[in-house]
Image (cartoon, rainbow, N blue to C red; front, side, top):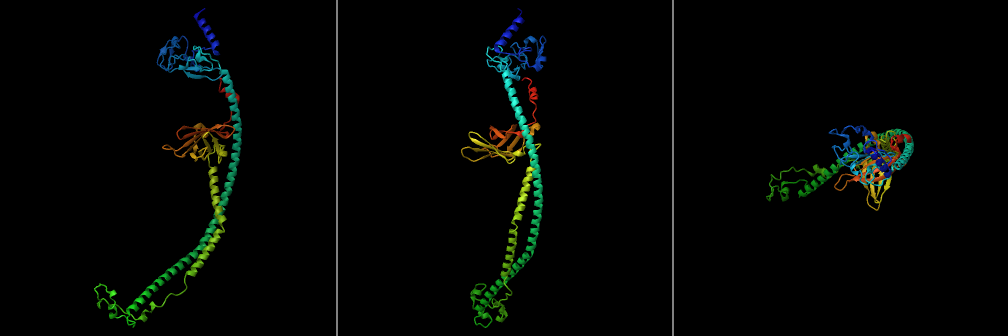
Length: 455
């Protein structure tokens, strides 16, 4: 029996003992895509191109190539990798250090060809489960996409309704603004004469107060004159002034004639000290009448409170509708149904709350205040899948750290629900959120499986 035949029989016996179902035609551990680089009986050039060796040194359990490519089926090279064919499931690469380590890493058992480990080929069973999983996912995607079409239809109808409502509100708002402007004109027209009257009466009242002040001054002057006119003859003489030392300007104890040079007028020429020159009526009555008219005007305004309040409501309503209509709810507004909704996930410690396009929060289950984990920021998925990720930032600040933020990853599902939450980095949260709005048009199961030819 030749050595080659003996080796072939030994390999077949080992394959039967370990349950291997794949006969290795190319060097062990080489993927089909690299088979052309390993031609038997021809020198082998290391895949990094740095050196060439004879083919009998491939898989000889000695590392000749710097990139480990000459030992794809042994553990000789620390940087090498072993290819698991895994027929019936999906191929995989494992580090060469796992070859013949007594642990079955490849489902086809080919990594343990010389360890004596008892391995079972589980690729077909794993492939069956994978196909079932793909089939279930395909069905979920199909149902989710159908729900998405319904969401798009409802969003379109909702957008049309909102646009019609906005147009109606804008028309009503314009009418109310015209009414408000008319009321303002009436108010200003009514206030103009009242304003003039008020200014006139205030001026008259100021003048009257000045007359009152002057009257008081004259009274005090008359009283001073009578006090100085000791002999009550209607004149104040030099002698009478000199008898009042409190008038001494230099406080030397005497009043000289020069110091007493004043013009002494007869009392009849000063009768204005005693006679009131206040003529006409007090302005108080007019002011009261003015205030009464202003009160009537205020009553008129209060009777139109509904107009003013209606204008405010119309303005607010228009602003809210304009904001909602202008929101980015996806290419076909498929995410519009999430607006003004909230979804919760309860864990052992917290209740997490996601309000799409608004905020994310966290609240302890057993008492404590709510923590803001981020406010709506933007769609943040990759360029080819922008609407697969939501970003919420500017949340409550962490102690000696950044403000909290949350990334929400959207996956296809028949239901709208928060499925998980985690904190991969300090103060940075991650949520998984399923929604039919993110489902794409599904391929047939055959097309799906064609993408997994190994199954």
